[in-house]
Image (cartoon, rainbow, N blue to C red):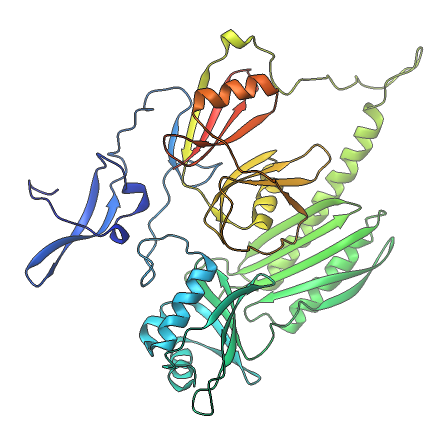
Length: 459
C-alpha cells in the first residue's frame, strides 16, 4: 500500500524477509498495459516491529549466526526472483535454458565478472570474449532439454547428440555465491596439482589450488615457505592444502588471498590472509601460520604439565586447572527462555558448515543446505565426528561431502518451543533441533552457561 492505494505484486518480486503480515516495505511501481504493479519489494529495515522487541537477548534480522544486523540486498538472477543465493543445480539449469533458447544476453548475467571458460586448450575471460563464445557455440539455440547433475562439487550440463546438425556436448560449471566462475567445454576439470615437500617427520604431499591469474614464481615461493614451516612440526602432517587466489576486481583493496590448511596428526591448523600483492600475502601467511604453530606447541606443553593429577607429596609449579561445568545446574522451575535470536539462514554445503564450526568453535550449527534448500543442524560429537540432521529429507541426491559426516536416519520433530524445552529437560541433551510448528522453520533450543534456555530460529 502507498498513499492509500493497494498494488499487487508477484511472489518472486517480494524479498523473503518481507513476506509477513504488517511488514513495512519499499517498492517500485511498474505499469504494463495500463495496470500498475509493485516490483522490487524489499523490507524497510529499522521500521520493523517484532513481538520479541524489548526482551532480553533478542537479536532479530541477523545475516549470520554470529553477527548482528540484516544482510544487504543482492541483485536478482533472471527467472529466480529476489533469491539472494540460488541453488547450484537450479542456477545451472536456468543458464542452460537461456543457452538452449539462444538468449545470450540473459545467459551472460549468470557469469561472475572474473569468470573463465576453457575451450580447446584456450582460457577465455572478459565479457566480450564470453559473449562471442556463446554466440558462436553450436549449443546455443539447440532448443533441447539438458541433463543436470553434480560431479565432485561442480555441476555438469550434458546435451545428448541428436544428429549431425544437432551435436551434443558437456559443460562443467564451477559455481560460487550464485554465479558461474569457471567452465570447461567438453573437458574434465583439472585436478588440484600436488607438490612434495620435506617435513620434519617425512615427505608431505601438498595440494595446490590456484584461482585467478597467479604467477608461477608465487607458487614456488609459497611452497618454499610451507616447506620451512613444516620443519617446525615434529608430528606427522597427514594433509596439506595451499590455496592462492588473485581476485580480478579493481574495487578490492586487497585482491591477493593466501590460505593454508594442515592436518597435524588429526588436528587441523588453518591460516588465511589477504594483501595488496601475492608475495606480501604469502609473507603474511607464513608469519600467521608460524604464530599458530608456536601457540599450539606452547599450549600442548602447558596442557601436558597441568592436566595430570598430582601424587601425594608431589610438588607442582602452578595450580591445576579448575574443573568448570558447561552450564550452571539451575533447578528446572527457575529456568527461563532468556535469549531468542533470529537470523537469515546461510546457504552452505556440509563441508562449509563443518569449516564454519571449526572456525567459530561451535558444538552445533544451524544452517540451510545449499543443494536442497532444507534447514539442517550440524552437530559435533564428543569423539570429534559430525552428524547432520535434516528438518525434512531432500528429494535430490546432494552427493558425498569431503568431510566424513553421518546423516541422521530420522528428520527433526515438529514441536512448539515449550515442547522442545520439555524434551531438553527430559533427555539431558545439550540442545534439541526441531521444526517450529508455527513458522515451519528449523529451530534449536539449548542450555546456556547460566542454566537458562536459549532459542535460535531461522527467519
